[in-house]
Amino acid sequence: MTNEEKKEQTENMSRVNHILFHPYYQECLAKNQKAEEGRIFCGHDMVHFLNVARIAYIFSMERQSGIPKESVYAAALLHDIGKWQQYEFGIPHDKASAQIAEPILSEAGFERKEREMICAVILGHRSEGACEQVPGEAKMLAQILYDADKASRSCFSCEAKAECDWGQEKKNLQLMV
Image (tube, helix red, strand yellow):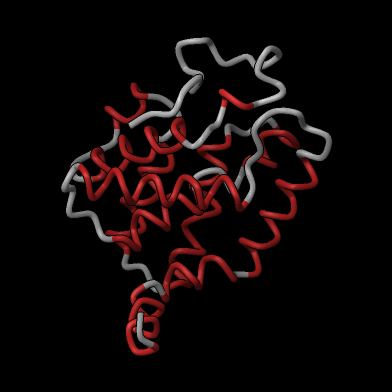
């Protein structure tokens, strides 16, 4: 890849990079990390967010969704950013994450319609039933995010697999194609 191609790719993801380096996003990321200190189960950290983003983008391309890469990555980077509020205040993390996402997306330059879609997707990422509730064109991204979120977990190699409250049918006990 040439330097010019790298520059173009970076510019095409400028709003996502704005999210990534946003001070409140970084603060929430640190709060997630602190809230999960000592947690033996899957975490809600940058590794998880990037795994979900990359898998979601692959699913988006495979399903020929036409969803912009920035929207896929934005939803994935923000989908669990409010997990600390669930631990600290009992607020469901999908609701907390959508509330956190809105001003960050706005400051990153996402238009109102894009923000509404991404926040709806975040609200619908926790279950297949919730994905069905997501309105319009956002429904496909909600399903993609849901699928990527679940596929990102390496249950087959997890040391806490026996203690996990995920049902056997949800656990990824082998690689998926």
